[in-house]
Amino acid sequence: MLQFGEPDPSLDYAPRPTAFGLVFHEGRLACVRVDRGDASYYDLPGGAIDGDETGEQALIREFVEETGMAVRPVARIAEAAQYFRKSDGSAINNIGGFWVAEQLSLDPAAKVETDHELVWLHPHTALNELRHDAHAWAVAVWLRRGRRSGPGCVPAPES
Image (cartoon, rainbow, N blue to C red; front, side):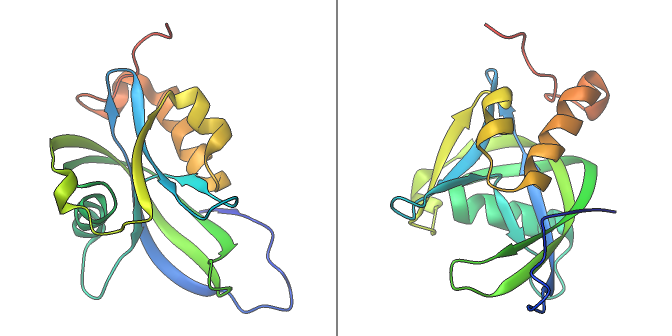
């Protein structure tokens, strides 16, 4: 598994199983803008796998919590790990999969994470804007695989 990020040798990074998703619609990729004032950033929707959840179950839950979007996981296309520090300062190593998913519905009232905003970015913009290198790498994997990634997963030509 690829490992991204530079660990601080003085910290102990807790392993955190995760699932993140790539949903493509009308030439754009679903991302979340996490509001941290001047330190705001973009992530792929997703996050920690809780308890006995599968990666697919966590992905479905996280999409609703962060965006209000109901999704159906289609294919796990990559896995990687990312060292980082959470906003509370804790050291984490996200370890998990990246899924192509299909948007089933969107209900903004279902979103519970008030600091997360659904934004649709062109995939090439996402490559530059996503906070984590592992997320950008997963987008690059998805772009390179194109038609082999499942239904609804082929990026439209650039306009």
